[in-house]
Length: 441
Ligand code: PLP
Image (cartoon, rainbow, N blue to C red; front, side):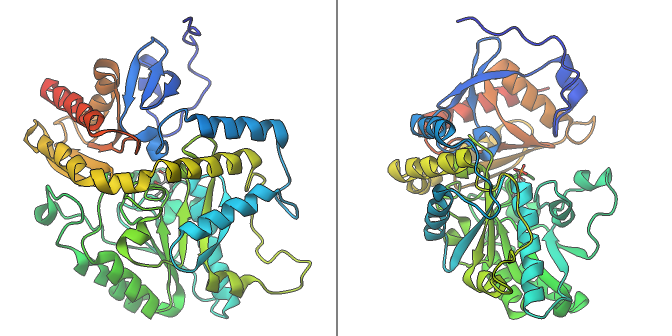
């Protein structure tokens, strides 16, 4: 098979969240994908251990999804999203509402996780104003949370690196402590025993700011991008109870945890709690076409369906909300998840998946291992040269030397393979990782 030659000018494309200069010195180019593998420009098959960026839950190139996108492109390339719609938007929203917990019955579509988060934050503000509580403008996020790169999401997120270059973002944001405490939680499979008490921080912040000034608290049920931090047992239940007691909305950012990563359509189901808003993206279309959304409760939606009938009830939307290619991709993806029983498969595999990676605790440089669902954070001891140096080396060497694609966050490896992976394939990921860790000086 002939390959396109590697482009010899890598300067024009400003790559996102990438060490651009290092990339240009030694590029990592992907030209194809099938099942669990990427195909590189030099003809190698690379095992995808992080489902792209946690999105390709059904594996690459699923034919049902590909055909649905092709058909949509041939039938309706675009339909205006404002004041008009195409039928598949309603069909998809109804399906998602059925999959969602409790009375989260209404879906607002966007195109990325970042847009979903900013949409959810705006819906929260609009809700409180509609309720006559316009002073509720403050948001509470959490340290080590990641909610994308919009101004709202960046502000409620808790990653210093994402703020350093941009200064103050939204005023009126405060943060809970991260739920991670290595001394008390290291090497736990699933939810750690200790830490529910950390939810009580919300009481402290409510006392400080006064409930009448707070719109919502936003958390990822399992913090994903900062290294897979499972919630302590009972934490989310306690957090939701405190929020509800004080009239704060709860936003679960399920951009990673949605669509099976934790064995359920949404993590809210795993934890038996009902947030007021859920953001989702990634796995919705199996990564094939950008699409995201917000699930809103009946109460929020009905409180906003007011005013003159010719006026939009919510002044918010995107040109590409519910794009026809995206709705087709999403509907087909949901078919695949259902027909292959992929969410239940995660629950069946979870224990052994966890044990496979926990065995890496004996490998060199490993400081913690945190598996949950079909996802695992592996903390490495930082190199003497500084934070992130070892993580970068591991990511690059995994790709070049071990035919393994992994995502790293500073010095944490995050493994989250497609949900179609077998335990043998999962073991192969762990085997290649161990070899790599053995090779590091
Ligand atoms: N929220 C969470 C929990 C995420 O993990 C991400 C991306 O990883 C986002 C939001 C942002 O999504 P996007 O990159 O599609 O804007």
